[in-house]
Amino acid sequence: MKQNVIIVDSHHSPYLAEPDIERDVLSSDATPVLCRVNSAEELIGMIDNADGIISWHTIPLPATVIACLKNCRGIVRAAMGFDNIDIIFAAKRGIPVAVVPDYGTEEVADHTMALLLALVRKLLVINDLAKNGEWDWRGVGSVPRLRGSRLGIVGFGRIGTAVARRAQAFGILVGFYDPYVPSGVEKVHAVVRHESLHELLDWAQIVSVHVPLNPETQHLIGRAELGRLTPQTVLINTSRGEVLDQQALLDCLNDNRIGQVGLDVLADEPNVPAALRSSNRVLLTAHSAFYADASLAELRYKAAASVRRLLRGERERNVVNGVGG
Image (cartoon, rainbow, N blue to C red; front, top):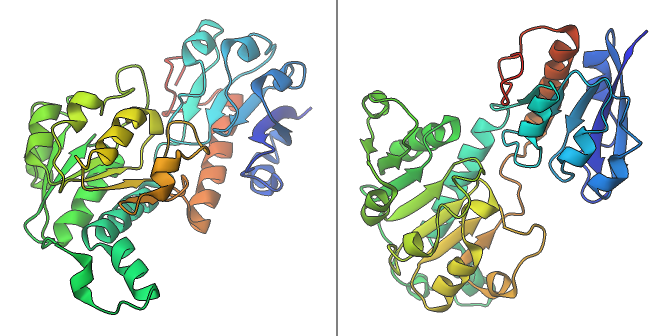
């Protein structure tokens, strides 16, 4: 008898039209069932008998939902981050939680560079001028030279290192802060290692954030950190919205204490504060950095393959809560 895999998606901005890729991957082991809801509470009673779960980020899986699972052999978060799942409670229940950490590395790195180039080259400003009939480069104001500028990367994992490689191709000097990467990484990638976040922020002209969201990184870029930036600094966040203190950022923008900002993620998506919508110094991209046709297909395939390994009792190297793996 085939096992039962529930794919938890949302009615609002759903990721899946149908579970065709998942069906192909799981065909010999399980039947995937797409379950769209508006809230976590709706899941209670709907997924209690699931043997496996694939979770998309819009709907959380708190302890109250996980407590109802009777036969679950694994939960796979179809993403790199897992802040919407109570992984500690899942571990207490003996349920492994896995992620897909590598599916969109190229896309997020490319998107980060697109934001960087657009902001540094003042494309928002010159686009508005040109569309309004002002065909004059002087209207763009001061534009720094990219080569020789200093990019500070917060979080030097897969995406952070991919961004570094791309930036170096433009002649940008790259530094990073990440207390969790081993010594010598800076030599491998020919970058500058900074021993503190504040040291990096004092050094960088462009700051790009690439960390997961957890209790340690929530508001990692807070009021004190933003206070170290200058009216010329470019700030980019393609990680998680809550990593950045959004109110402190709004205050900085209002007081002209920061230059330009590129945000792919917000603290309360999809709600966009009016100050961000109206600012010509802010570029918003609606949590799309991960997306390409190929990356979404890769994510769905790898999530399904991961849950298949968990159902079979095979080793899954991307378990994040210490159960099995």
